[in-house]
Amino acid sequence: MNKRSRPAPGEVGVQISLLAPLDQLITEGLPDVTSLLAAQHGQVVFERYYLGTADEPRELQSVTKSILSLLVGIALKRKVLNSLEQPVLPLLNWGGAVGDPRWSSVTFRHLLTMTGGLPSELTDPAYDDAWFTSPDPVGFVLTRPLLDAPGNTFRYTNAGAHLLGAALAGAAGMPLTAFAQRGLFTPLDIPAPPWSTDPDGRALASGGLFLTSRDLLKVGHLTLQDGQWHGKALLPPGWVHEMTRPHLKGYVWMEGIPDYGLMWWSAHEEGTEGWYATGYGGQYLAIFPARGLVVVMTGRPCNHPSHRHIVPALVRLLSH
Image (cartoon, rainbow, N blue to C red; front, side):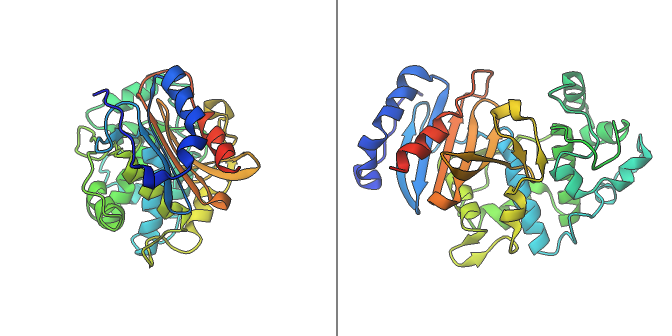
């Protein structure tokens, strides 16, 4: 559907004219952008749908990983997990033989920081295709050797994220979808969202979640508010800081963002700190705590030039 949806004027006030050049830039030059939303200090200041409608769930791709990190925080608060140093292998209910004895030392922290020793699909696409299409993706990953000792090297990995989701489900004693609904989506008043699964029925924790842009904006506000939602703490104290602070250098060439936290990226835009959840095809959740700003941008899930430059442009316009 190509219907272009706009908010009521009262929702955005004077910001409509302020951001009109950005709207025009997207309309005329960026055909793969499908939605752009921004909220500042709790008020929606911009909302446009360039393809589809407000009620349409968007394929988040790897933004799913950043939401997975929020779920790990919820698990810590609920005492489902003891700490990030907890090994993942005992929680996977894997009855077979692992392909590397070092699997026993892989922890939640290793998988959250992409330092578990697994290959990266960005440098080894054949591996990524193989685990993703395997009839038993978790078993496929566990029966392969690690490239090096856990904790040594950053390698962006879909397989590691999927393994993390399976381990979290094992710790919670329920499917990842059920844990996410109970701990995150229901408190945010988000109905059960579509979530793709692997052949074993596990939610694809690496990138299978669909949310509307407005619901993703809620996730951003929860993060901006340090895990507080209507006076209730969904996350443990300090988790948002731990999740979003730089832990190590990532692949700067991926999005031009240098620092990696716990499945979140960290950058400075227009002189202010920004936290990014990003996904293939132009999916972005960006939070700028000093400006009280949350930005959601979605795009066609296909290979096209990055349009991340829209986010700092929006930050600049809203800083005037």
